[in-house]
Length: 239
Image 1: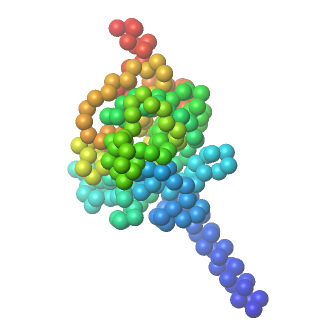
Image 2 (image 1 turned 30 degrees about the horizontal axis):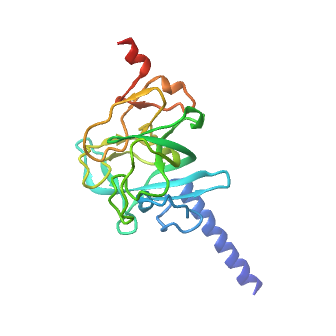
Image 3 (image 1 turned 45 degrees about the vertical axis):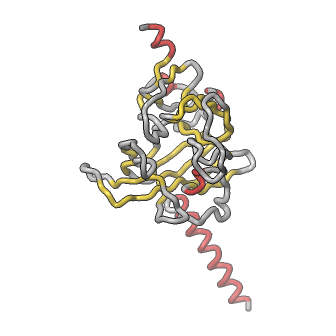
């Protein structure tokens, strides 16, 4: 009996160790939000994220992608948003997050204004996602309510995303967005701005973020890079 118990305990510890190694390596499989990665945002991102939140409201987890099977002319695999409950998905990014509030400035491309004091000093926190309703930004979903409202403030998580591999990201399956290259490592693509930035909304498609362009935000609290859609108010005054 003791021998069987010892064997069972050893096997359990091995499973925990293997799961930990997979998680650390970015290969944590989709488990449909089983513990410990059982935190839910309460909207569409839950179909392709698994994460956990500690008692300091710090988030850690994974965002999943679906490889379409296509390859770009340069040889990069094409990936889009995954719907993990119904299709094969792989980890696209490891994520860390901190809970903040953000004000929606644009729907296309989706742009959120945040306070610099809420951005961690650790480099890379550059992507915001809201908590709760609406299910989708444009109001299409099972909740039957409208979408995100420009000018409204939402609670959510500011994420630092680290890509586990290099791929060509197109976003949604039916998006008009031609996509962009995501390189393995820290992903600088951003959907946030600071007060005082002049934001230019416009365009069509399901753009969720901007191409990173170095600005003087790079030396700020988050050390992040923001977008060519944004012109600093100081630059506007100089013209």
